[in-house]
Image (tube, rainbow, N blue to C red; front, side, top):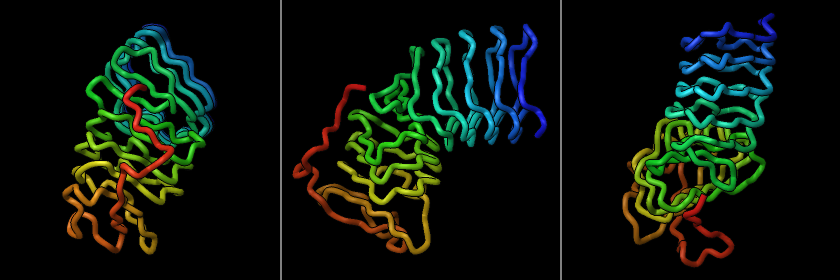
Length: 238
């Protein structure tokens, strides 16, 4: 795309679905203070975009809105934000999120959680190789880890009951996932790579770890004792 910058007119309240999708030459955006909604895939795969500042009144960011914007390295969610769609910042270079929102909080690794104890988004460009999901988390939402380029291992607390669509897709370095509780729904949301087994560690005293749900051509089910683990703390505080 030959479009390199965008300045929207005052009074604009919404940006429609896929409005600027794949405008790869776009590097900067100036949003008006009036903007309230950025719809689905509005800026998906705008790979040249390096920074975005949201207006104070923005309330809605749709799913995949900035998915694949690999030039983005940091985002601050505005206080007014009440809806952050799945995969809105998946497959980006973001190393940590910041948030002024009352609904969305950020943990010490820069991952976003909502007030219903769901993990919404992990910063895909974060360089750490191990991530511990905070205790009390109920769900891992759609595309939460999609495109996380450096993670080799994820620790899942026993409170997690559900894993959303494509939550663990496009994770080139992922080797192992450690579960502290029963198998949550959603084993199909792990990317299934032919010839490369994903190690699934689970407590032998928990349930749901069956061949039907975790087929051996994709997963290596390994019993482990989570209470014998040293150096890992499941921290309930963000």
